[in-house]
Length: 255
Image (cartoon, rainbow, N blue to C red; front, side, top):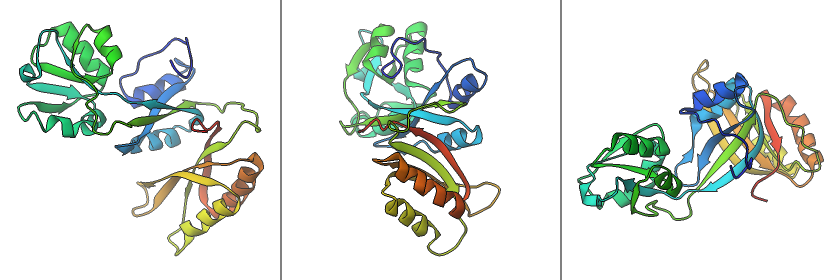
């Protein structure tokens, strides 16, 4: 909603369903979480973008606020189990050390658990979710802001099956993927090209290539001041690297 405004939102319960929604044209674009400032990269999503040849057309950063909630009238001592997404549980691990009687259970989605508690009138069950979920499903916040690190931010990418037309004078960030031979200094050579072309690497993530044991694909994000600098680097990298592909050219949300 922050990125698109008042556009209609289609809920998806998994990242696979999210990809299917845009490929089948059920949705015009998908908003996919890609990394968190505490928990790190959501690695399977890199593979989903690449395997389905999706294009990143934008990005959005969202401050994450985790709250423990349950049915009204309960206390934390009444809660026996807390269900939430694995990332949310990881980001709140320190808080729950104070309550060893609570069993933490991984689930598919934070807000979905809140809805389930409301619909099933589930006593003794808690959810970790945002304040909006508590208001939507009439739950009581038993403990607010329980994330371990207060500055907790998730980066989302906006993807489509086709590339978006953004004026080149507006583009200042790009995401790419490539593979390299097992040769000494091959990655360092690529990084030197980026540096020489005045690109700032903001992210590098390696992913095993299943068909070739011990060989890796690299997913890299770069920012730049001048689109021509990126074009120069791209022309060189297309020659140097194997299976080079641009996943997206878009506007840096952090600028």
